[in-house]
Length: 370
Image (cartoon, rainbow, N blue to C red; front, side, top):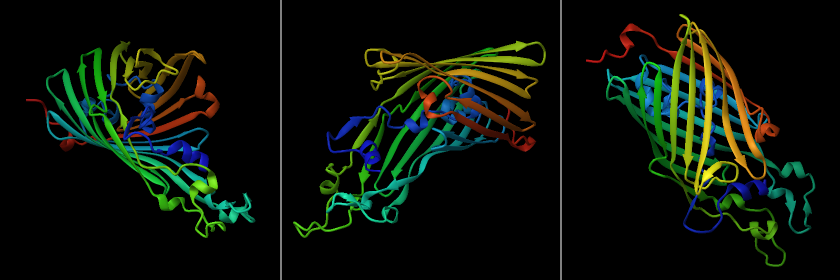
């Protein structure tokens, strides 16, 4: 537990620092369909999931839509849940809400299991061990507007909440902006993630680090520093820099009843993630690619590359993904399977299951454009 806190909590340093992975719990993406296509969805997004991928895509929703996804990573250690709703307000505008939670439960708190005076574990060690959870949550409030028959723009305001048991918590705020050009076959999209630069301000509850026992030499309660020879964490503010996400898509008909959708995205990050990424100076590049074959708009098969990177230590690293979807009238069930290749394979596979429901009622259909 002490080691985990050492890695996860901020220590005293400069007032603000750039966080390379400050909102990494959101980086995995949402929606089993999009993830099975490698996350190449900046241009292809056109439903309730667009609140995450590109808020401009919400403008394509014809009816109120709902979505939910559950995923597990690292052999089930980390659970991820996502829920969203979108509602067409009028012929040109759509609003949406998206909620995200990523958590690790049953983390052992061993602060009071160590006998500082004897420098050994206490007797009946288990009785001195408690558990806590670490959870990251986010709420997106999105708005999209159609500017023209082919052009859409959107924005997502974001609130981030992170907590490590009773030990520390953080709040973060920023917004994403996006645009799409949607032709009959060719699609283009761009999203600027954390356009305002996200500020994450951590607060540490020092009383949660209290250690049982009294130091016989001073007559005072033991301190965290005395027992564990580590500095007590302090609050700090991190900056999460913007990421430019460029996307393209191509829709190809196959006969009279089928189609193929192709997506190719490129993320440009400015936070110095150079260890295992293509980069030019401080700008790192993260490409993604995906494809979907749809039969009669009922059955879909998908495949993609969610990570294509290169580094001196590991060379070329490619992480594929696959999945399938089944549409039953207004209900769609999607499954995605990933992380079975590349550097993360040793950490366990990822299963993603999501459902999408469109409330297709005549009175709820988006009003026709004037």
